[in-house]
Image (cartoon, rainbow, N blue to C red; front, side, top):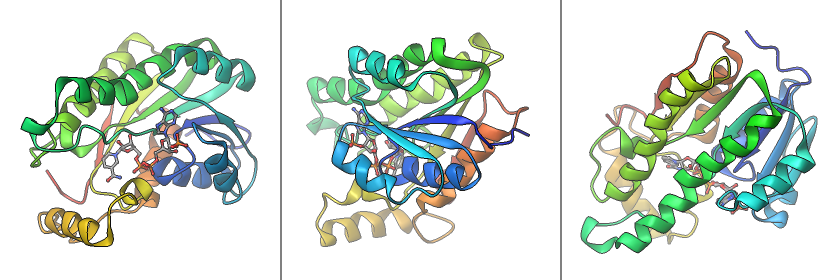
Length: 238
Ligand SMILES: NC(=O)c1ccc[n+]([C@@H]2O[C@H](COP(=O)([O-])OP(=O)(O)OC[C@H]3O[C@@H](n4cnc5c(N)ncnc54)[C@H](OP(=O)(O)O)[C@@H]3O)[C@@H](O)[C@H]2O)c1
């Protein structure tokens, strides 16, 4: 079991939601967490909520040059966590054009791909990579074919990378409905309708929390015998 004390852990998408919950959890256990996202203001606000040792860098992981700048600033890391999001491809299949899907794919799946490639020279050989995918790739949910395509790519990528990049460990955590700021753009009524519609199919009868997903992220980061794993934290949505 990996001791988190003094481990350097980079979390792209660490300024909000599950990435931020993961940062708080790991920092509270002695890791040095580096959170990264596009907005300096979000990073500054997030940093004030992280206990212990933490720093922040701006990055847009859809840009290879932005990733290069990030890794030259950050240097050596022990673990990489990818928690950045794109929900742009959510909607009825007939309404999601190829151009919209391609942009959303670039924003998430390609971003994950490029981040891992950029990280490799800086990542401890037997460290770990943790990818957040999503339950739309694990079960049929209405109006999520776009998310299924994007997260399905990530889910499958994880298994192959675990083989190809060993002894680096690569694991995928697949969240279900988790109440995070990702839904803040919706009106209260729209969010309630969306959540009620999804919660009625969940065994646990509620949405999940970022902290519940962060617990699983800590597990795959610290358990040295876990690689190529896919962990569903979804309240039973499948
Ligand atoms: N919440 C759910 O119900 C749910 C369900 C299934 C899967 N997921 C997946 O779980 C992951 C985390 O979701 P969340 O709900 O925690 O999201 P969130 O609260 O919206 O946080 C997303 C994070 O990604 C960063 N980000 C977005 N685009 C980026 C880019 N191009 N480059 C760098 N950082 C970027 C955001 O910061 P900036 O805006 O500052 O860049 C923010 O820190 C995502 O991959 C999401 O698709 C979420």
